[in-house]
Image (cartoon, rainbow, N blue to C red; front, side):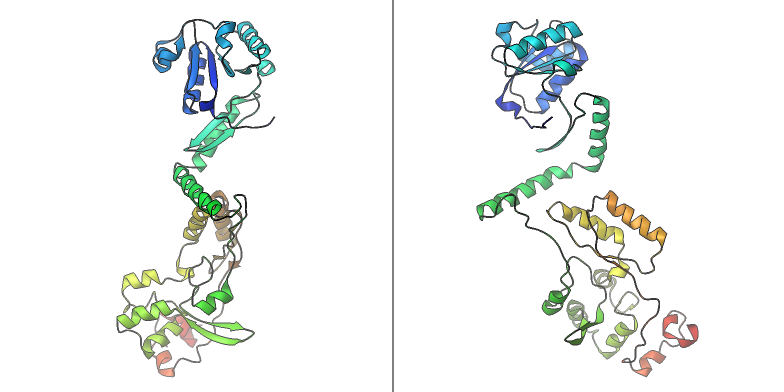
Length: 347
């Protein structure tokens, strides 16, 4: 078997049959874009009459009727009549689809899922049509109506690439980590949120203190960037969520990856995947991983259709002492129950 996609608008079709079966087949052909179609039914139902309109012929076809047809569909006829019609059409060089007649059919009509020009067909080669329908319905729950717009966007991109001279089947996109380059250009790595708004990067070239320059600009506008704010940022390991002087909308924008649900990163990766023809290196971050959290997270990623992830990152169980912070700043929170990590007595 070789699955093919036919443009029915370019073919002359004949549909022969009675009852609900021929009505279902007519609806399928209309959805597929059939234009040159004649329907033969000796006893059409009122619904079939309404749907077929001027295309309906109220009798069985003669050999002369079938002569112009290139593709013949037969549905809802008694087995003997069905097989005779199928053999006659085949002897005349026609391609025949006879419903529930595997021995006399040339092609099999699949269960079809349509999202605009995105067409997904499921066929069991006539062995279990009901199973094909169930699989089609399952795919329909996974592939929503938004794929119509996605296909149009991808198609537009592909036309642009071809116009620019890129081979249409070229593998052009993959997302990988860019840690070193990100440091050089003052950006964050790849597709990930910031791990911290303030941290030290250790490389072969030396150790470098890195700070979120965008956050600094925001704080300067609010006249909040000073020595005290820098020390508080160090004490909080680069997080600003507990610094109440910073407006709430600023704190929401500059959340670190530890303060963002991984479900959001996975959802964005799944949406992004439609436009990436290789794959993406998606790091996931869990502050205190355990088997329950990890199994739930990775199962969700699998259900969303991600092909790959990358590193699983967690935070160390212990913290490095902030020796560069003045003693006065440390003492101001030394005995605060809201900051037990800053108090030796609370360790």
